[in-house]
Image 1 (cartoon, rainbow, N blue to C red):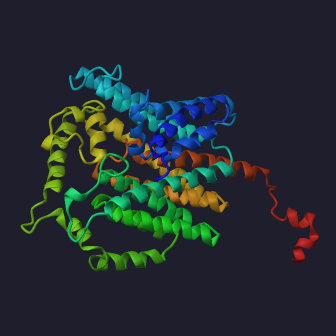
Image 2: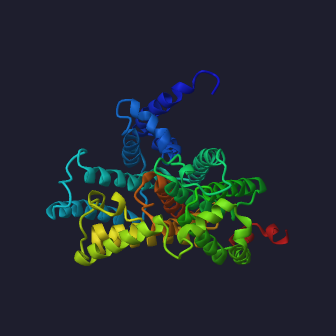
Image 3: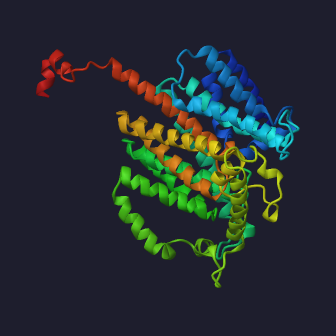
Length: 444
């Protein structure tokens, strides 16, 4: 940074987690929630904490502190079917791991030395973030602050991605130049994150009245789409297109024309490297390229596994322990992975979660009168669509870096809906009452 303190920033951020854990337990859990938001997606930043005691667990500790602080100090509880569905799913997944143990597919899920238990524990941090938001986001100001901090977090990810991507020459596509990204898992995972939250702020910006705020939203969307383009993730390109189509149907029909024009002219608009990446699905002989062929091979093998154990699957978190094409540990399709590991029961839970998330956004978008809440509802709906599409191309669901902010916004949206309903109850049923109380209002 040029002032000699850059070396200490990770230590200060690490200490901040402990301070905010105490603050959360002491009566201000909302501050703990605010503090964690920028760190949720930025895994490469959190990796600096590994040098310090419990560095790999400070995020989990802060999330738990916020949840406990919320239960102790916040009187109003969030109301949504999602909490019950998540709890039932969490229990089923743990039982499913024991089923996998009984089949001989995995060790007993007992402690942190067991990879399946660690996988489950890390996954369960996501609904805890969701619960934390629902407990402590208790007014309009808190909803607004959560959205602002989400925007700041997205800007930080955009900046990191663009600085890395634009440092290379992209006259032609080169797989070796693709960066792992600030999420720490690879460019495809980073792309899924970017597509989700680029669409969130596109939908959110539709309802902003102040020109400066609207322009800031669209500038953030533009930067995010540019960063997504240079991740060279075909799945995220499709997620963006699907979300824009939904936005056009629900809010801005002019986008249908723009989308149609883009689909016919994209090869003249996007950079050559992007064109090459999109057209790499098959080679000149009509055969699938290596990445696409890997997916087909994985899905073919997965089909046999699903047929063999369709109801309960092979046990949660067992796929990563088996032998598969090119030693891959993922099915490259989250829905197939859920079917393989947890069967029909698991996929029903997954479908319910996505449907309820979509419903939360849609209802808030349609029923709220506050532009802040309307924008939150529409933006959330679009982000869920993007997430649902992206998961056809890999697991973009179980990583806290990709979906924690999404679930944070779901929690904020549930609270926003409750706030809207509470405000509606305080308004007199007769809309003419104000005029009757103030006759001069009729002449203005």
